[in-house]
Image 1 (tube, rainbow, N blue to C red):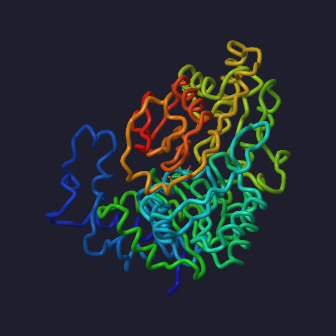
Image 2: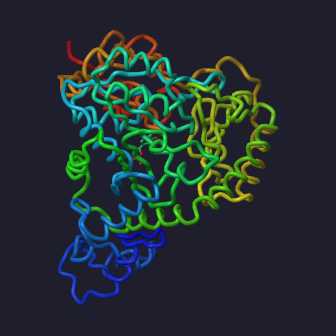
Image 3: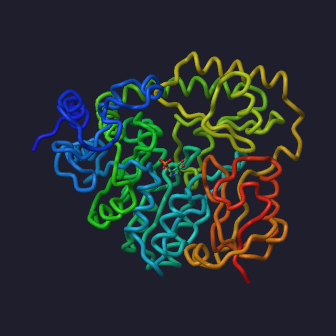
Length: 485
Ligand SMILES: Cc1ncc(COP(=O)(O)O)c(C=O)c1O
């Protein structure tokens, strides 16, 4: 069968279908023409016409044999995969399914400690035990990059029979480890390699970006196309390559874990974004690379500000970086990343992807233009003139959670009897819950981890700073759920 990246089978079918039906005796209940009026005014009537279900000719995401299968095949060809799955619950759903498909109760999964919470969800389902590898913390910037070669080698040597190795490529800050080396080492032991590539769906389409995880040899990669590829929020892709991972098992896990009513507008957005990336991705990315480079230079010229770039790579834990993700350390300004992000939003209507104590993370999506960069620079200058403070110790605090030892499998701890204790009294206990700062949603504490004094102090600092903590049974962080006994 021949394929052309000019095609968008799902998009085309929805367009045709929207014009045709004589009667719609099926869900969704708005019937394509009777949505709440205010919603229709906001979203436009066409969206409801294509908000369809598994009707004849529209295929079935759970068992695709028609237009969805063709759209997935086109995506596999565009991204260099053997097969690709469309997903409607983000990379979150894909990672949960992959972990479930690739690990088992009593098995072990090697993974960096800065995993996204979705991987923790997968572990709770599969019952596998995590073997954490320490990510490299970038000196001066204090964020987690990739895992160093020696740390991966240690993990593989100590746990040769583990079910799989999971890598993050790249992390939230756009930095990767030496994924090619890690994948090759794991493959020597017969282990499958999974990449959480939630932030890297664009990498395949421009030579100046880090190589994508599949090209570097991993067996499966999960990508949030909505984050960097232009599809609608919640949509993601999972690519498989080679024979180490059982495709049927992954497909089975996806069907169990995702909704049985996938949204056709979301699926069509994957089809359209794939087509645009395949046909125009390189040119679009080139434009944004030039803009990002110009902004980097101007930001670096501001006193107190330093941008992460090629000069910070060390050939190991910081092996490569995505220049479209601009990580700005504001440590020398006396203000925290949280404070600057808040001021940018409140006073100037400028929103960044994320802030931590010392950094801002800017994502160069397809919508960014030179005017946006100028406004950001002006606003930053203004903030620094009006608000900058002398730098002191209190602003140099590391934003990373302290290390915690796993003393019980996360699944066992999650299902064990728990009691709620005042946070101040939890040192020496075992956590029965996870929690982490959002964004990025990386767990600071995982069920089954021992809580030490340092962790209590870190959580007290989060409570005082009033940052958005997710996952905790008590969002005020006054109490924590710990194992009883
Ligand atoms: C490293 C990482 N993995 C996975 C995810 C989950 O992606 P999604 O929001 O598409 O479910 C995120 C989300 O921010 C992430 O940062």
